[in-house]
Length: 277
Image (cartoon, rainbow, N blue to C red; front, top):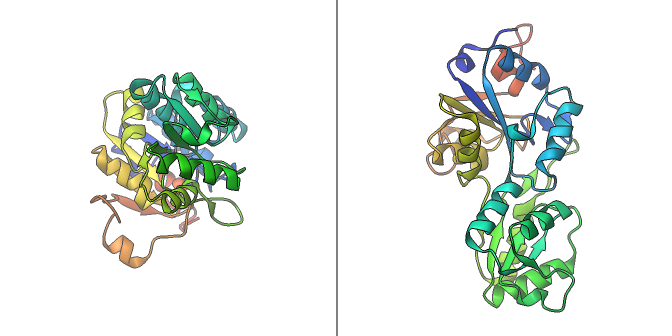
């Protein structure tokens, strides 16, 4: 199975997971076939995600579960990027973490003292925010107090939602907005639209002409632009962009998608039976 003329011009691709490769763990139309075709055409592939709920190993398992062969080196997670940043710049400091057990491990493994569950949590030097389905009011209260007292606020993303089969669910950006409103401070972002995930993926892929494929103008396409990479937009994740947003060709940071497609399968394989899928 061949690949489209657009894709054939690239040596390697960086694929966003949520909203591009899958939604709620279910592959988007012809995504598995598209990835197989890319590999059959000799294209190198890296998978990236702003979702910090799972570890890289978890994502590898889930990719195998939908029929995509992958190794740990193929997956770049924002949790890993957060751990790298903390280890390089904040080792030995105290932290309060909102996120899953995976994010708690990333922060501890970076050499920080995690104060969750202690009386000193609201006096942490750093608040680290990642995606979670188990947010409590106490989490917001402790984080906001710590930030008001001078703690750094670092979040994995500003994505307001993430795609699920029944529609967009509140994302890390929604939690971040609550903490920013309560503390009067603005957080710093480690994941997309910052370029670090793309640059880490490039380190793993090596030299070559690279295409980023994602479903968000304000995250995937913007991060690609900051990393100096071409990007294509697929419409399977969040709500489709308005005509005005597409007319501005990028939404943020001068990002300009080289193509817009209904889904990853159509982008890579072309139209199915003469019609979009």
